[in-house]
Image (tube, rainbow, N blue to C red; front, side, top):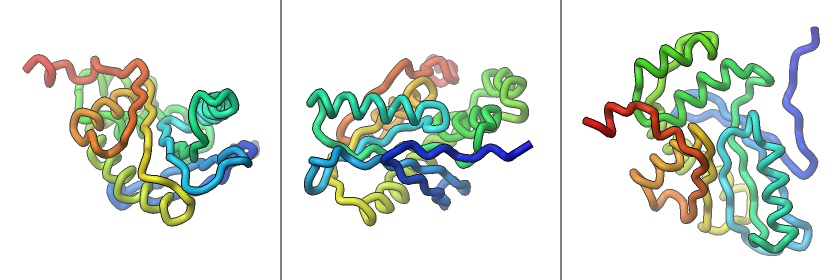
Length: 188
């Protein structure tokens, strides 16, 4: 059987970056802006590239074509794991959750094919703002206007970022955040 490989969408460049903050590698897909775009552009950072990179690219393209948003540089963050969705579930739980939650982690372990550990949101945010953002700024003409988009656990991470380090991004799109994560923190 042939090994699965990363699919590169037209207009994108795919890079693997190692994060000192997280201690792991990330697969970063960066999309070219519309051809008529000039000068430095705002940046949209999107979580969960492993399962939604095509959707994110299509939505951003359609919004730009319809002039609903200005031209932007889209940066999608995923993991270099091919199609290993169980591993993806473990990694996103590690990176997108602000605390541990023994009950939910043990419930996810069966689905994710191994131990699940949460609580890495702070380190992941350090990667985004202290490693990925400077890497993007060094290679592309971008402004300091940035947005973070997250859905589900990615939405939990975006909500965590907005509440704990709101100046990390200028704009937030938070879709269906998993606010049920570690209810004991919110009720304590």
